[in-house]
Image (cartoon, rainbow, N blue to C red; front, side, top):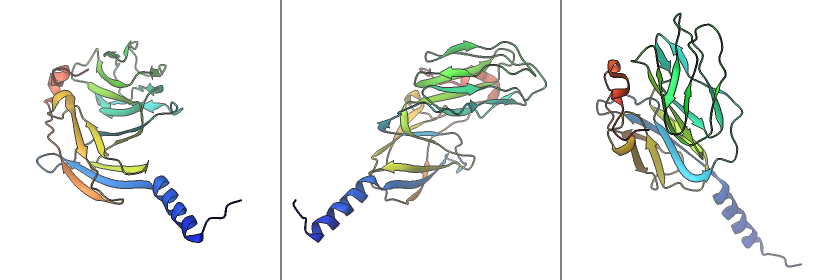
Length: 214
């Protein structure tokens, strides 16, 4: 049996550690006025999702508004649409990745909807035209979303990712997408990123969508 010198073993251990070490970064997304951008999706196109989450995601209906407006879901995940209002709602989508229509309902629960294709589903309420939401279905293992403070924490990614693929319904870019080079960021980095988002007037409903949006 071949015995490796101690320095070779040390080198191989360091190499193995560098390959499996999980990168962590914190990015804060703001608009041109310095206000936090909530619900922005960031994907690393490195490893495909291996299995669908068992957890049922939720988009609630509160004060005639979908909460959250943007939901990050995974391929094969189910989404529930509870109604916390005192009025009836009728949720529907005509999007390519998922077409469905719930019954008109208020207090009674309805069956969660399965989102089995990656992409973007735009949701509306057939009773309240101003209500609009988005289910972003990701097929990638590393997908993240900014919180109420605009913070997005990248965790659990091995190696050194080169690019973040961004999406937000208000991004003023083709298909509401943007690429962000993070190849020069070190592990543990914190960065503020300004993105060009423009909030539409709420009363225009689906007209707020950019041309070409799913």
